[in-house]
Structures are given as C-alpha cells and as structure tokens.
Length: 345
Ligand code: TXA
Ligand code: MG
Image (cartoon, rainbow, N blue to C red; front, side):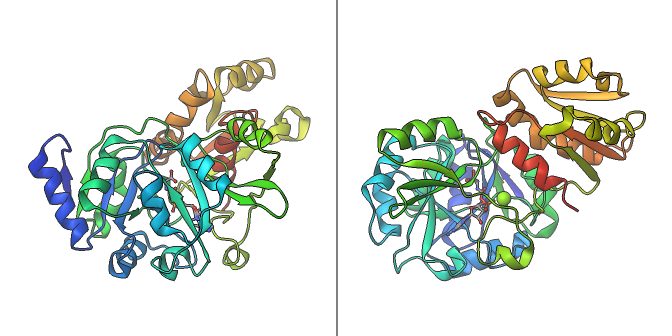
C-alpha cells in the first residue's frame, strides 16, 4: 500500500523527503500532471523510476529544478537564449533541452548529450525540491504509455499495484496536460518544439520573433525503433485500454463523417470545446447517443482531458471513445497530439 501524504502536515511531508533522500521514488503534484520523482544525481533512484513505470531506458527523464541557479548545475554551458527562456517562462510548464553536465548520468538522458530541464510552478513540488536540496527527475506518474495522472487517486491506480512507496496529495492538477518541450537551435536560428504542451506555441512565437528566431515544429510520431534516436516521440502514448478513435481536423469532410456516423448509436463522442460541439450539431453528430464536452474553452478542456479518458476507460457502458480534433491554436495543439497518440493501437 502506498502512503498518501498530506503536504500541509510537516511531519508527513518529512516522510516523503526521507523516502526521496533514501532513493525511493515518490509521486508529487505539479501544475501539469503528477510526476514520479527521484534524485537526478542517484542512478539507484532513476533505475527505480524506470522500473516502477516499466519505462524503457531510451526514453529520458525531465530534471526538475527550483529556478535558474539550480539549472546551471545540470548544464555544461547555458546559452543566452536558454537563459532568457528560463527567465520568461519559469516557473511554469516549459521544459528546455540543454547540454548536460557530467554530473547528469546517461540513465537520466537516455544516452543523449542533452538534458531536459524544467522549473515547476507547483508550490508543493517546489518546496520538496528545496527540502531535498537538489534537482528531481520526474516523468509523469503513470505506467509506460498509460494515461497521465492528474490527481493522487489516478497515481494510486497507475502505480499503487506496482510498489509505489508514497504519493503527495496536491489536489487536481491545474493545467492537466504536460509541459511543452523546446530546444534552441543556434545554427539554424530556430526554436524547436519537441513536444506540444501547456505552454502554447503563440507565447513561444512571440518570444522567438523578438530574438530573430523562427519557431519550428520538430514534433514527430515514431515507432519504437526510430524513437530510440529521437526520444519522446513515440506514436502510441497516453492510451486507454479501450479503443479511442481520433477524427482529425478534416472531420468536416465526408469521409470522417461516414466513419464517425458508424459509431453514433453505441459509443461515447468526445468534443474538446463548446465551439466544436456547435459545429458537430450542425453536422448531425450531436444526435449521437452520448456526448461529452471537455470544456467551455481549451484551457478548461486540457484540465479535464486525461481524467475524462480515465473515467471512460472504466465505464462499461461504452466500447469506444470517438474524439474530434479541436482547432490547433492555444493548447489545442497539445490536446490534439495527446488524442492522436492515444488512438494508436
Ligand atoms: O509536465 C511535465 O513535463 C511532466 C511533469 C511531471 O513535470 N513530466 C513529463 O515527463 O511529462 P515525461 O517523462 O512523461 O515526458 C517527458 C518528455 C518525454 O517525451 C521525453 O522523451 C522528453 O520529455 N525528454 C526528456 N528528456 C529528453 C532529452 N534529453 N532529449 C529529448 N527528449 C527528452
Ligand atoms: Mg509521460
């Protein structure tokens, strides 16, 4: 049985710190999703994170810090642009790929010379980093390719049966979708998005334009073999155990219409925003037996996405979830990315 820690009680938080200091991973809340944390500088702790998640070693971990100074220890050199990104977007849902220092092991980076660094905004996570006194590696606290957890109960469902020691209860995650991962490419004068996430491309674009950089999309969808050369881009991810059908942005065309219509009588239809639902109504989809709208707008939708997928998975009334891509502005790109990968069998 995993211990559930109330972070408002100092004596309980001290148990979590003791676990971390003795290299036992502990699940912690962040503003994006819950993470499974362990000391970055301990290969023992990192090894335990990989095995608890059943995650292959080629998929590297994000190192979480408490601001820029702690980030410096993780990197050999830090470029001006990386530094400015940190100053503009931290604490918050932006992960920056930097050149790793020799203190960071290959186990953390999957053998890559780059380390992913992020300073989370969540007060509890930040307090835990201060109390441990060093950076914490933390992948999302789900089993490999599973649905990311946005509450401590989700974490218990994912990792409880696999030997998790403790989870800190920080309530529901505010953003509900993972951080955006970026890399500065000085040669090409580009800022590359490696994973869409809670930091919207529009904000990064403003940052890039002011510095004569071009924001480019470096996100790809790879099978397991190719992913070993470009981690984090696996096609299948965030997956419910049941079938999830993803109707892409061309869902207004007749092919998608026919496909989705086939399931109208028996399955659950998921629309990301109210606006998507309005379009669907005009096309007859709203007559589907059961529909769910994730949120009025995209931020509300992102916060509800993983929880809704998890609830659907456990609901015997439905065989499939038919989901429709939102428009790709704001966090729409991240939501579409998650749904697309969740649909891969
Ligand atoms: O919001 C988040 O980022 C959450 C919370 C807990 O901070 N963490 C998270 O970690 O989503 P994880 O491990 O589930 O996803 C990290 C992503 C993966 O796609 C991984 O491959 C990529 O970041 N990544 C990590 N280190 C990398 C590296 N050195 N090079 C390229 N990609 C890297
Ligand atoms: Mg993950």
